[in-house]
Length: 508
Image 1 (cartoon, rainbow, N blue to C red):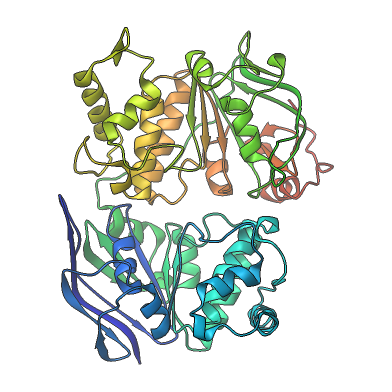
Image 2: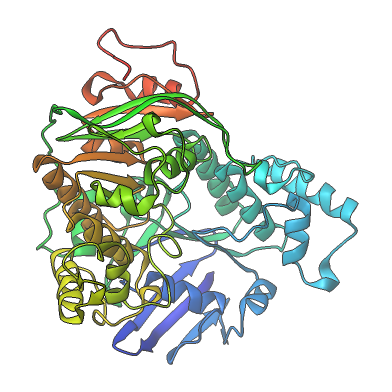
C-alpha cells in the first residue's frame, strides 16, 4: 500500500525554486531515505508534508486520497510525525509534561495515565524513559527518544526523521536503528534524512536523491555503493577522496593549565583540572558525548567566560581574564555549535554578519564602515566556500544549515586566525560541503594555524585530527597521536575510563 505519494510538488521562494516538480512515493513499512546537498530542497519538502509550508503546485496523496495538510496539528491527526534536527523540548519540564503539551487537549489523558503510556510504549520499542525525569537531566540521545515517543503516542503512520544520528554516540545509533526496524516491521513508514551514507545503506530500503530542488535519481542503497550515491548527490565535479597527511605541531599556541571551573548555571558541567596544549600547525580533536563540558570549555577559550589570567594562554600572552574582543585581537577565530544566534544573527544580512567578527580588520577605518570592502569580503566568502545564496544581502536565516555553516567557517578562516576553534564544523552538512570544510581546515593548519576541533562525529575526528583526546564529566583524557588511538580506546575515554592508555600516549 502506498502510504504517501507526492506528484510534481513545486515550492518557490524569492530568488530560488526550493522544490521543482518533485515526485516521491513511500509505501507502508518502508524506510525511505531522502538525500541531497545542503540547499537541495529536502527540508522544504518535509515541511510541506508536515504542513509547515504550503506547496505552490502539485498534489499530495495520503493513503490513496488527495489531501492538503493545513498545519502540523492536521499532520499529526493524519498520522504524520516529525522529529526535527533541533529538538523542541522545554528543559525545565518533565518528559511527561513535554509530551502532554504536544497533544491535542481532547486527547490528553490524566497525567498518571499518560505516564503509564509513556513507560509502556518506550519500553516496547527499546527506548525506555522515565516520565518523571526533567529534560535538562537527559542526554541528547534520551531527548531524541522523547521526541520519537511523542510521535508514537499519537498513532504515527509516517515518521519523518531529520538528521537523527548527528548528535548520537555509536551505541545510541545502534539503539535507534533497532527501534526504527521494529517500527517498520509493524507497518510504520519512515522518511530518513541523513548525510551519513553508510547509515543509509545499513537502514534504508530505497532512496530518493535531490539536487538543486529536482529529483536526480532513485536507488536501492543496499545495492548501490557509497560513492555512486554521493555522485548522484553532488555531481561529477566534486572530489570525494579524503586522504590527509598527519602533521606534527610546532610550538604550543593555546595552553590551558590546571583549569577548574564551576559555572553559574546549575545545569552546566563543572570542569576539573583541565590541562591542554594545541600547537601551531596541528589539528587537535576533542571527542565526547554532548553535555560533558564541551560548551563550558569552549566558553573559557573564546572569552565568553573568564578565569585567572594565567590559566589560558595564547602563545606568551595570558588571556584567561580577557573578553572575546581582545582574544580575537590576539589571533582567535571561533566557530560555535549554534549557527543561528551565536554564529550568525538570523535577521541580518550576510554582509552585516561578516562585519560582526571581522570589523577589527580593514573593513573599518577609525570607526567608519567601508561598505564596499564589507561587500567584497562577504562575496569572497560566498565564492571561495561555495555558499548557495541569493547574494550577500540575503538574510542569514534564508540559508540552509549547511550553507550557513560554510559561510561562518569561511568568515573566520579568511581572517587568518592564529588559533581556530571549531565546534562540530560539519554537523548536518552534505558530503560535498564536509569535504570542502575539511580541506579548508587542513590548508589553514598547513599555513601554521593551531586548530582545535570539538565534535561528536568520531569519523570526522579520525579523518582530520593529528592528535585526539576525549572529555567526560568535565575531565579531559590524555592526548595522543590519532594513529595510536583505537576507536575502542577513544570510546573508553568518552565514557570516562582514562586507565586504558597506549604506551605512546602522552597527556598535555
